[in-house]
Length: 344
Image (cartoon, rainbow, N blue to C red):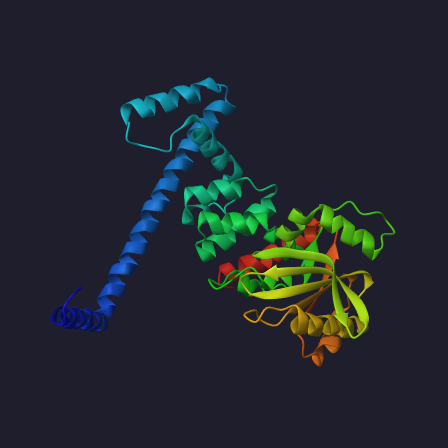
């Protein structure tokens, strides 16, 4: 064990380091800023190189000069001449070609692709539509997402949820503090569920259970399924909550009530009752108060506002749909995001 004198010396050194950081913090900030700018400059050059290679390959394939086999030859030559250089497999060279072809005619987006790394570009490039690619490009540029963060947002269908939402806080999407929860409070898209025309709430619950993995991806991050038709006993009566989840990030139970019709103010009273029962009899001592989510086929925002105005319980009301938004809505939402990212 270190003796008392040694501990005193270590403590003195620690204080000296802290004092130095305080005195020279501005210099450290200058160094960090330069490091970030240097990395960004290197990344832009790398993406520019991939762009030029993609353009070169694309033009020769288009005019019939090259066939698919030539790319394998290129990859072999590069590997032989520069054995320590990675990133030039045949598959990646074809990606460079696709990269150039996807963005070559888009003067707005082509500068953005140079602001994110190649891995994220490849992920975004796999999007189904131009609108989806633009959406994630703008978010990734604004927030500097890691590969893992970007993949999580795409797997949770953030694009579809944001586009269909009437009141999504786009400023929150562009914030570095965005945690993915703000986009979940207005609407959901259950395109993965095949519902009959005149479905009932029990049909909706059954469809959710059959597609539970997709439902949780749509629901948001860190949700674990607790149960369906969860029984709570109050007095001598039994009551059943449609769905109950546990959110690890919020450390709380989330009660979900399914409504096949329009939102009604009395739904709030029912949910408050369920939340009280969960908090008294089900919630663990270390968990936060339970949250309620009422999922309705339709909702009037003014009715929701009035119904929630005096509610003490943490309730949310969201609408769900079974189809993705139309192209005009996508274009309008993308324009909002574009204006914010461009500082307009």
